[in-house]
Amino acid sequence: MNEILFFSHLLIVMLFVLISLKLGKEAVIASIAMQAVLANLFVIKQISWFGWEITCSDVFAIGSIFSLNLLREYFGLELAKKAIWVSFFAMIFFTLMSQIHLFYLPSAFDTTHSAFLQILTPTPRLLLASLTTLMIVQQLDIRLFGFLKKQLSIHFWMRNAICVTIAQLLDTVLFSFLGLFCIVACLTDIILVSYFVKIIIIALLAPLTACIKWLIPQTPRDSHDISL
Image (cartoon, rainbow, N blue to C red):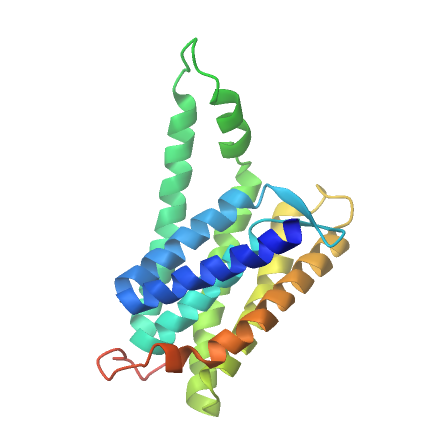
């Protein structure tokens, strides 16, 4: 059941990413910020997937980078940079609001406070690891994407695949060491399985990415930036 749900989840996320692109740059930026928040909220839930233990956040990690590359391709570098800071701001805001939410004393009739405590009580280490990883990975992605576009002039789907593959390798290794070192039993297994799952997602997205310019044509007004 988890396997079918996982691939359905991936399709739904990609559908909403394409809808956001059709709606315009503001919607794409909102999509990137929302997926950054969701990835860090859902990372604490573990599921069994083809016999492996993974988290529910891998789809959002890929989706946010894919959205960032779409924003860079269609609307330029400056908006991609702005999207990184917007997503960083959204994560900080969500974290602060979640902690204020926990400070409220529940009434005698409340039955949800213990669940909120378990979900919304991040350790400082995990929060720092998440924010650090987000900034480094997204900054690397937009620079690598721009380099491949300007220097090699390869097709968008190939640029996206290369960037996402490299970015998610860094994301997996960096977050695992910063947030999970000395916490999980075998860090190597966590890194290898998580990255393998992300590679599968990237491969599944390749046909969609190859058709993206046909599905949503890029107009001259879409892109205003040709520099790195």
